[in-house]
Length: 234
Image (cartoon, rainbow, N blue to C red; front, side):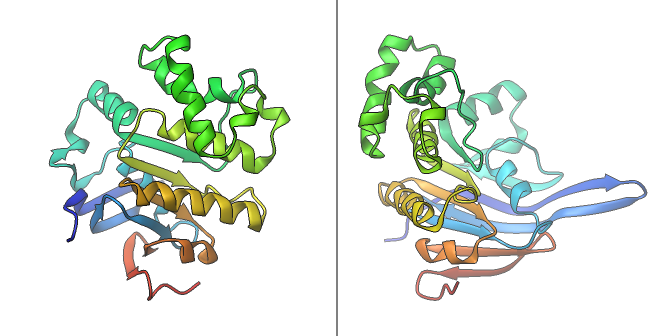
């Protein structure tokens, strides 16, 4: 049975002015994203991938069109409600990890809980649980400088999950990792999608899409192709 769409985009456009020219980063995007689906957004530099990810996470607003999350128009939310949406509904995973160097692994994982008003002592059990889930229970007290790139990315994935968000957005999560470690991160993201989350990953790496259920190719701000598992080629 097909899941109802978590995110629905209709006619979404995002335009920027560069000098006297208008650059159409996104130009009339129609798209549906569902729970339990691991989706790759691929395409060359300048195709609109990062712009799309920012709109999905309410880090930016569309100039035209509609973005609905479970029926709510997120582009129309005020700044306070957009911040609440990002905090409670979205987990972000970045290429450069964005871990705080003075904090331990579990403290980095707990940060979203702290920002939501949960005390450090109360947040610790959930952080440790997630570190165990990503295979880093024995690194909980290590700081980022004591971790490998793959381990830091696993901490970042755990941090993205700590608020139990239904939507995970990953921006080039394997970009700074070797192929073996990158494959392990892709497998982890696939497992997260399999648990009922919607996982959307932006990547330049066509080989990474083999781990996904779906691959959407952007070209000049428009959807060039939308392929399902079985039809995806690296």
